[in-house]
Amino acid sequence: MPRTQDTASARFRLASMAVVWAVTGCGDDDGQNEADRIGVAAECTVNAECPSARRGQAPVELVCLLDFKGGYCGVVGCQQDGDCPDASACIAHTDGKNYCFHTCVEKVDCNVHRSVDNEANCSSNVTFIDDGTKTKACVPPSSST
Image (tube, rainbow, N blue to C red):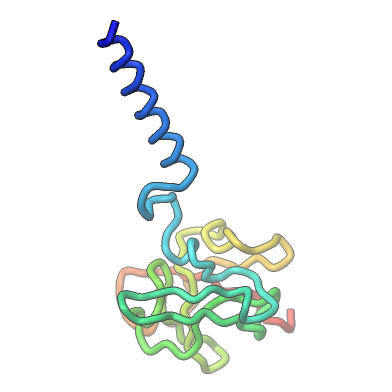
């Protein structure tokens, strides 16, 4: 009988650990990339709605870019992809500024934190600062559209 109690106790501990992992998460593998976790491309109305993040040891301050319809949490003034969170890239925008925009494969990648009224498009018609394997980025609509 003690063996049955030990087995039941071990199963209970294992089940309890599984519940804790499911509720709190285990590590960073939550099915989202860094850009989605910290809110790159999210809608916003003020800077406080955009979180700050870290890129290695350096802080990355996301700001609410109000030049875009619905706002866009991003980084302005990047010089290279290394200035941007993972799953985003430094883009030379048509307005003459560089931004860290979320990278994408299809439109759904761009709108994790955006409403239907303010959807961003997954576009290959962008100028990447760093030439690499990235081919598309999430471009939000301008505020004048």
